[in-house]
Length: 340
Length: 117
Image 1 (cartoon, each protein chain N blue to C red):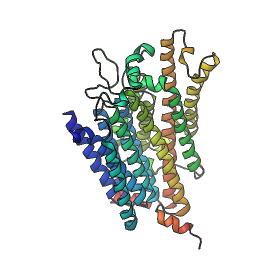
Image 2: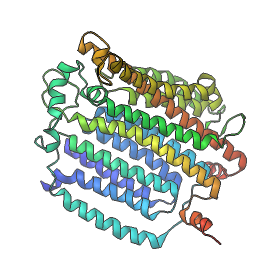
Image 3: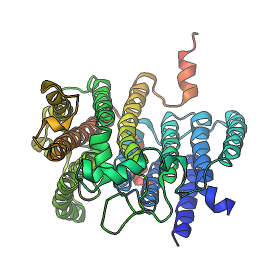
Image 4: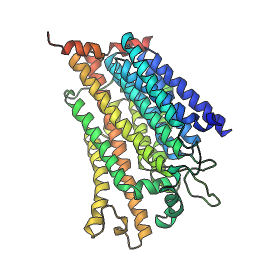
């Protein structure tokens, strides 16, 4: 049964990817990306990767198609054909694919418990993490404690990418004007407004649950941050960007993005200040296991704040661009796309 | 047996090649970014497939369970997904700037404009 589900999901994924490559209508491609994200989230679920499935569902099926749609609205939805290059690329891709398939014949069988990947550090994580860290979710233990330094690097990358988008698009922002477009209020859509009003509080509460329950069940800062941002983005889509900016303006979001990284880094420095290693959580409490608990909660909070703030910041910047694009008249494509 | 034990890896390769094809063959910059995303997701699927253990549960410790999936690939991919959307948004922001500067997001138009007259 598991195998059948696995085969079916992967075949659907393949089919979706082919149709994304095939279609010339970029709007269809963007919507298919959402389906692709949802399918891969379901696949991760069947593989027992619950934390990953969470993240992919929010990112792959939610935020990613939304950003692509915003870009399409600014850049046009029709794609030009390019036949001579297509043949050449097809030959190259076929050759590379054949070589890679030949290489898989040496791979250990799928699900083999004796595969090299499972006999390195994984037995230690599964066998010892409860004694060393004291929390049942092994993924959180590895993410926030064993590999905390690595995770710090990733949070910094996310923060830097947010800064990059800010510097690329802020220069194009003109003085304050009422912002509509992608996030125009929809007074006529009563159903949308009602559904959004009912949905947003549970989304935000759920994000907080995922954030603070991540040690015991699936969850953590990355997932919570993305879900939290999705709640705000939904609000902006239905009630307008201005309404959201009254709650969390540009300044607040930029400040929070930096604050999260700062919290994470400070926990690391706290360890050094007491003569221990960077990110050594035993500096936080007398008992090493409760030190681990405290450390994980604090850095996951830092991760959640930065991820949520960067996602919201990116969404703000994109929808402001869209507003400006529509004023210039280069956003005609979106309006005609909506009509068609 | 060979089919079921390696099917996942073959699908990963097929997805990866579709992504690569889109990056190579399609001139539209947004389509290239979608292609890169498909390529990236194929790597995610590869890692998660490698981390699967037959009969293994989700790696959240519980009484009476002894077999768990490998948690390490889950950690790596979980963070990679969020980093991926952050870098994708940076790429899309660049595309918006290119559109403003050149008036097009088709590779040929951009190159034609760059060519010295």
